[in-house]
Image (cartoon, rainbow, N blue to C red; front, side):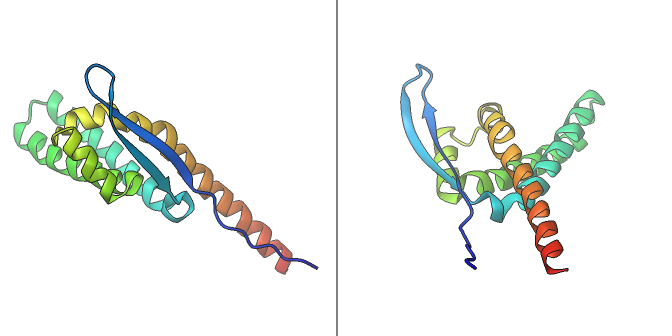
Length: 140
């Protein structure tokens, strides 16, 4: 009998940062071990969504104190999500490129995280659960 133990597949992308004319200014190589970070990505994403709702609610209620407090937490949550999704080195390049403009970074980069990283993380968690069930069934 042969037992095969493989490595998890990484999510690999190239992120091109372009100027206002569409010219590529920087190319960032994204390599994310989604199996290692799936739960953390999911948790940070959930926190980010909750803070987005709180931000809108504070804005609609015209509650400036709550709005500014939530903005601070929102940018921290986005920073944490960027660290996981892009890695600290790429995150620093992104911040430099966008000159720390959090609103523009959110507008331009969160769609990538929503479309590419969140689904990959959800699939990874689903696959891990399935693999664990299969492993336990074989033992019994």
